[in-house]
Length: 328
Image (cartoon, rainbow, N blue to C red; front, side, top):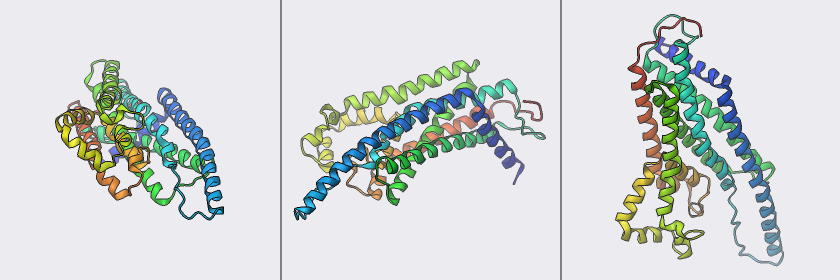
């Protein structure tokens, strides 16, 4: 292991441990976990009742000798919608807060306790801090996903299949990219601000626009949202029919789509919802089709994370090297 790699690894470990010692961060994480667990537990209980009703109907139909029985309209993964929405909103705040704490803590201490011999460059600090933040986010996301899946099995009485496990895993990876982008945003804003709290305020302002304002504008302008259950569904149109109609409104759709594509949250939501059957129109299709349909959202998630990480490295690299070996 090279000296640079060793320093990056030490910074990542330090970032992970320091985050766990932060009371503010622990409180925010506790709120997120409690909220997601509550939403899954309530949804799983209701799902169990609906599943029992369907099984009763199916048994009665089979007893009467019916061979064509309507399939279950239930989608077990859709119960994870609440957990995904909490990650989309509260998780982004947690990520920004972690970015703020990471930079402000270093600004106060001016040293990292695990380093002893050589200066720590801004690029190494950015990479190590980013990897440590990914560790925190991965722990949070995996814990939430495990609680959700187990709750679906024990309370909802419907264990998910291996392919559904893969789809949940892909949604978790998207959440990891999503949170990492907001971590970089919080760290960049704090590093550039003369007063750290001002940087946090700016980052939260951007969060407000990206997560709440832009998606709301896009949803309001979406013609499919003008009727309960969807305009195109009310008209009896499938996905291909919807695309055929929208070809007559290309200019309008281009503007509306541009507004939504400026929102990182919307890209995460579209991909995660497609993977977890939240949107009914995606349920008949297999994983390969879903991945192809959401490839644009995947590309935007990767682009946002990559650009913001590059900006974080550039921001911290412009600062003076941190002489290590002091006390924290």
